[in-house]
Length: 464
Ligand code: GAP
Figure 1: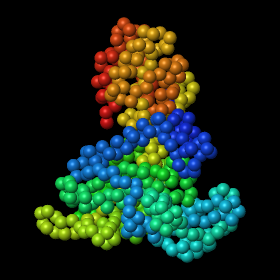
Figure 2: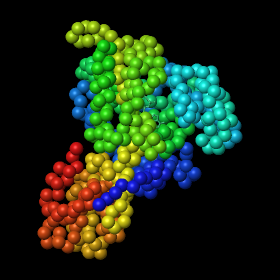
Figure 3: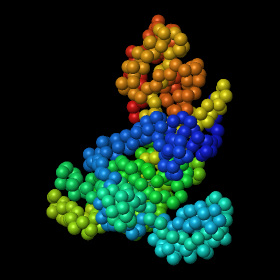
Figure 4: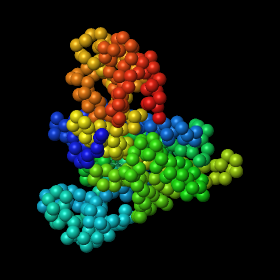
């Protein structure tokens, strides 16, 4: 019998490094704040999550197409979108230890929720009203500077040879969806999409986050998976409801997350262009927090870009001839944040008969390694040769790992930790009966399968 034991966030962070999922960036130089690298198992898991999303959002839908737009865009895009003027967080510095914090987060910690539309003056008023309750997360002092708006766009000197970055900055994109809006007309003109239709994109985004805490939950470089669905204005409520349902089902059915770790949260204070906004929150070890946003963005984005670019971004209905600016339903999630949720949901510590094991109970289709192949003994060439042959065959179909280190029990524990659903052992009997022992990660049960039937066996088990 196995029994789940509670785990802490620190334990998961150290697990991610120890087992080759996530490393701090530039670690040999002391690290680089709020940036992370993905190790051999991390990159496989990240790719599997991304492919699952792409399959579900693009390939399985006739009316959705993909896009890969550039990270650098004309600075005019960010002016039109409102990011140059308004993409900022309120920042205050602790006068004692000089730690900088987001004022909306400090207020949230004491149960006060700031409105995103508030001016610097208004924020400072509620900040002052709650001064006695608010503590610096580092030194506990309540002595802060006034809140100042801090723009989150990351500036670069691309194509600017004057040496003055602030004069004509180019930005690293702060969200991927702007690339979708500026290609709306290209996609209409070059494909056969008709409203309603969607455009999906996965790519890097950059934000100069003030407080980048909580490991890969909030980082300065991250990947977004964004989806924009263009609809008739009068259909936006109906489509919005549909996409909320679709996205919830994705987490439960496609990612296999436990439903008790998910909940909806409606935004009370909407950004000025949004007509409705709900987040899917996940129960991270530090509490329920935003995982994905589902937004009804109205016609704001296309209207803004039409106005600033001078390009007509309206749509003409091919049947009725009616001309209008489409409304947009957006679903937006950080791939890295999704990976963290998947790991937290799957990370399990269990008491088992011979002690304790850590096992990553990932949905099998997401596992970084699908099958591990072992020869029972390392020093028996006939076992090693047969196991190698089997490995060479299986690796053309699934991500496989060959392991002949230590004893089989230790190899099982290693594979359990990285979430490998199946381990295959070639033993002396295999040389006689051409069958192998297949061990299941979750049940730890073993069964004997003919080598000739293995491919079919895994096809059934490892297909969604
Ligand atoms: N286009 C809409 C948009 O970007 P957002 O709420 O700012 O909306 C959407 O971001 C999602 O992107 C979030 O729900 C989160 O999953 C992810 N995200 C945002 N900032 C992030 C950061 N600094 N680090 C990691 N993920 C982030």
